[in-house]
Amino acid sequence: ATATFMAVVLGKDAQPAMDELLAATGSEKDPTARRAMTAAVGRIGGRADAAVPLLLKLLRDEAPPVRAAAADALGNYGDTKVVDPLIEALGEANPEVRIAVVGALSKFGDKAQRAAEPIAKLLTTNPDPDARVRAAVPAALFKIGVERQSFVRALLLGCTKDADTSVRVASINTLALLRATEARADLERLAGDKELAVKEAASTALKALDAK
Image (tube, rainbow, N blue to C red; front, side, top):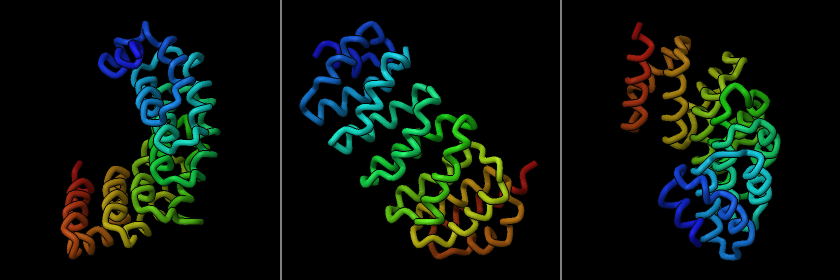
């Protein structure tokens, strides 16, 4: 209990309590408390060799919120050996976990290049049924820095026609970050979209393309 309190309140300053927190998290029976403790492990950071094995175990926890917290925490440690387990977790049944996994993989940047294709498949081969997951993909691909940018740009252009506004906005924002000049005609069309959020995102993206 003391370790958990220190972790939640002090964050990284609670490093001295880490060993106690890891032990308590691994044995905690209540899923709500286990999720909070898992998130605290991610916030504290520190020695990956101590935390990562437990977090990988929690990535398979019976409670979805715990699995999501474990994925997010793994992304904070930067240990590339967890990239493959996270890629596998993209097939999670729970959308909240999939969102967390996409976000965690994006934290590795270009060290997670092998995750780019599996992440992109959430928009292509078998589009994820949850719009929140699809909306998380564009920014993740940008952060990873996909080598085949032409493929990503074409993919994002297609996603500007997604049925969900948040996915369209996320795709437009990422096209702007990529300075995708080939998207200008589509962005001009979207600047007249009936959805205000899409219209504003497209207008901002066009300004970004014009910026030197």
